[in-house]
Image 1: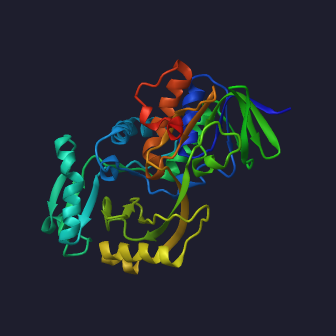
Image 2: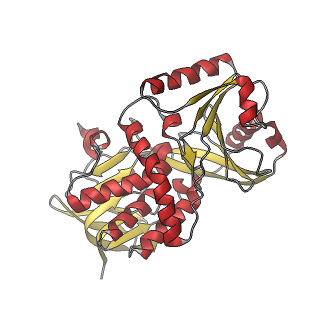
Image 3: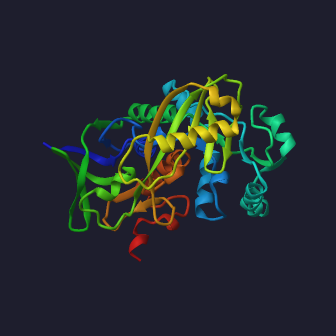
Length: 369
């Protein structure tokens, strides 16, 4: 007998667990199938930045979704802590972007020029004042910009809490069974084909990250590509830095307990994971450039993950052309921020027939137009 459910979710990362939690609370029988373990993919490899402003390249639907997602986090983490006893490690304090020379300062100014017109909160910090905010930062900083509303979360703890909450609400999980493809009858979704098994369901949600494009039987092209990101965990005095600090593509994210996450790379390396000498060297060089004291910090762990990127750098969220099949992937560098709101919007769509926010920009069928 095949497995069965009202809804089958492919992928137990932050997006899949958020969807399962929402749909189980709505009374649906939910089964999550995962090739590995909860949060073992790009969700684990993230830094946990909740930073729609610092990531944004301009106004638009992605920024609007990110701002709405950021606003939901304080209530979400309290719910999860009460439901599961797991602390998601939500930390306020803002995010500080630095410029070490005039060219970087001009780049930062250009990056926030439109944010002023949009009324978004940020504070310019003169080079001399950066040391007052973060005394450990290297001297000679040209300028900085503080984004006071861009916060952070412990992404590993958050995914664990979401999975535990989903299970408490009735969702089931099946591990170690990779999804092979989609099953359908006519124009209707009927289930997923697994390695050595199948799941019969009237509704399917594909939240398998960059692996989605490898599934057989997709009704539409889903051009999600893997973008490798390497990271390192350093050990330092918990008081060394108090907030996330960015210098271009590199960042330091303190956990408050002495752990400092240093990242990251952006590599088109296909489906090849792993940490390389070049990638790790670039990360460590940037970390010690930003905070010189980190040159002596022990390296406790290194890892990599495959972020799901798309051709237009927008996520893929919504209904496919196959009735009953939904997509939730392509979140790229914003998966931790957007995972929970993606779950709530898809719950609205599946249960009521329409999400409460416009999602046309993220339409899964946009790549065939």
